[in-house]
Image (cartoon, rainbow, N blue to C red; front, side, top):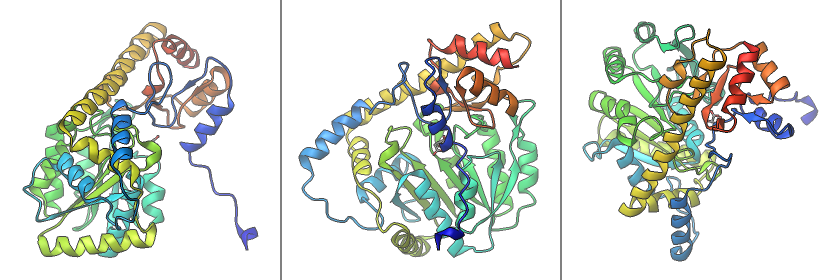
Length: 393
Ligand code: LMR
């Protein structure tokens, strides 16, 4: 039977892990997959996570099944962190899911059951896995213009014009903050304009928040979600705890659905339970239990925010360092968008041939779109990186 299969194409981001691992040149700079690195190249377990894990180890009495929606404590804590109000409690359901990708897949299942003809509009470009993940679940996707690759800004006018052509009930996939791959987010005024067209055309916001706390702070980064929640009847939000808690491999995520009323909320909750049951039955518990301990303990939460701020500030500093180094090594080129972007990513804006040359001749790894993960930059490698980029320009 399996001889009928052809090899599946490698995932553009994941294949870089193997390529970079196989390269043992000491000058290697890995700007590929989006994981956080410290200045000495580690992706550490957060101190606050270690403490919560110890507490969990000491107090956990059973590992019996929790149910398709996961931990109610985790779900309540994530809902609070996302919406910061109980005003929507009677219209809102939040369930745990296996990571941000798992939550997106559950959301796709819900959309396919509720609006089989709906089109999901996604930014051009968007996270490389959005398209196969949502498309693979049977959804039809259409791009809306987002990133102006010449000016390195968002073309909000073009985005709004495209959304004006959407049909009632279409879904608009948005990145709450730290747009992946461009790192360029709408301003609050631009979010208001995007919400205007969503309300006017009766569209449904579907917001992916994988980097809460990596752009500004936890509240500012949730602006788009909280603003839309005030204005729309229905909305889907997917959260990931991979980056802001450093729990990548523990697969911790949640999804929230804002419904028209309580009756609809209860129906959606039952559908989410049935979707989870058919996909993976129940989400993994460990990481979510850790997040729940941290978010519900004032002292641990405060310490987590300090660690989160430290990660965010390092990323910001590395953007500035690379921009300064490039100003010196390639003065005829403008890379100032590096410091306008937030979170882990931005585009260098170089060609496929230049990306290939950086990999082959300089051991510098980045995604084929020229997306770089700025967490791979350190004070020790920034000059080498800037020189290598300058040499290929
Ligand atoms: C990325 O964009 O690099 C991360 O979100 C990791 C992934 O799974 O693609």
